[in-house]
Length: 252
Image 1 (tube, helix red, strand yellow):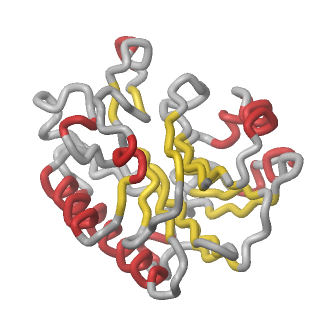
Image 2 (cartoon, one colour; image 1 turned 45 degrees about the horizontal axis):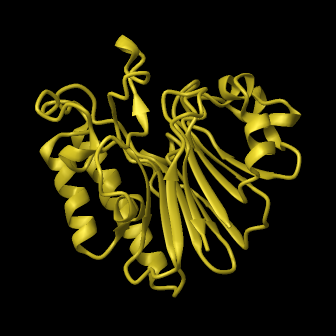
């Protein structure tokens, strides 16, 4: 069972850049997508239902902004749109799918912007989705929170930590939230298996950052406390089409 999360930076754009051939080659069971930047009316039949996949979409109310989606080869028991909080749900920030053996929460965390102009909103979303995940945990299944968290947790998670301390995504309050989440028993599955540096999931378009691997690791698969399923977690930095790369969790 392979679960993939990918901030595609525009769903219509990624379909023009090889999304379907990538799906056909890798055939993951689930693909959680962030930053779809479109409404359902703007999607053609292939975007709505690529061969072999069902789909669910949660676009933002604001045109061309944010939004999440899920493509699946297996039928969920239930799909929940958002967190039941209008200030987040109007931006299409999360989709939750329940399957027989686990929950998958695909989320696009807000960017705190500039010198933290939207930091309070970001931290409020962090708290809300943490509570959501912990409520799901009470139902006795593994819970996977995946997506673009827009936080590089530790210095190892970005190329230039010294020069990034005042940048959105590396602000102390954001990093502290991630620290306390992990201290509560949630697990950063990729970092558990890959403790070495220079693993990134997002690169600026400027100065050949991707070619020089000068990026940030801000896309995650996080598991709830007590998760002990055998797994492998990996990144695919060679897969182009977005400024983010796909990240994968394989359940063994």
